[in-house]
Image 1: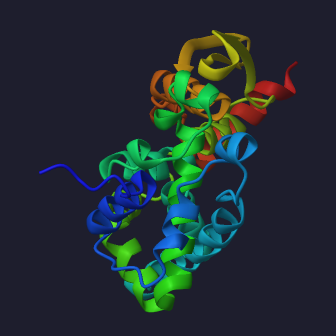
Image 2: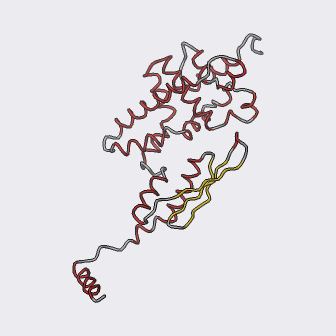
Image 3: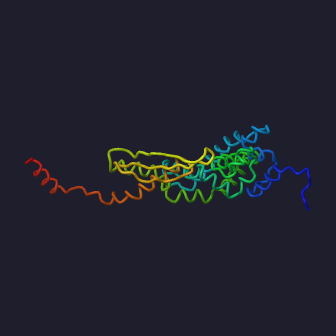
Amino acid sequence: MSPPDSADPATTDAQAVADRLGHRFTEPGLLVEALTHRSWCAENGGESNERLEFLGDAVLGLAVATRLYREHPDHSEGDLTIIRAGVINAGVLAEVARRIELGGALRLGRGETTSGGGDKESILSDAMEAVIGAVFLDGGQQSAFAVIDELFDAAIDRAAEDPGVHDHKTRLQEFVARHFDSPPRYVLTSEGPAHDKRYHAEVEVDGRFYGPAAGVSKKRAEQAAAHLAWTALEGLDDLVAPEPTEQESAVLADAGSDR
């Protein structure tokens, strides 16, 4: 049986998303707004999801920080910050959005639809935050935290396994500071149309270049290049000569006094 002519596709798509979220909206219009990109509003009018995105970003940050604080009492503030950054980023948000098939429910303008906007990382991550904002306004903190726990559980556990392991730039920066005089230097290039750019990065360490590595954003390309450099150089930590003994220091001092 076909749906009635009066059925609103936006409401139908939003209801399907709500089912996958496991949250029953008392105000379904909030979710429709969360799924509405500014490109749709430019052509059709109405309110975009940008304000809900702003709210959802704050709610997500609080939910993740609260969980990390409670579950990892032995972690320092620095480790907790790194873990949170490993969860609250465009890549993870887009990954979660794809898992609940958010892209197919988005209301996009004709240009974004044609260029595959429903699978763009930036659009998906922003919409995911807007959806969280909508759940918070509709059901309060408890409902929002429950949805976040369900959707981001694996990402939080993965990031908490080894804080900083996925932050290759920070690890490389600290490593280079131990072994070389100058910090890493990144060189970026890009290719492709504006709506589908690919970035390539190389990193220079002590006059040698590592890469190129590719990514869908500048940050991801640089992270990938840093990982290549780290992998190639990490053995240096095992090659650092031990501190000389007092007797060896005395011999070296005597040898130097003849020069």
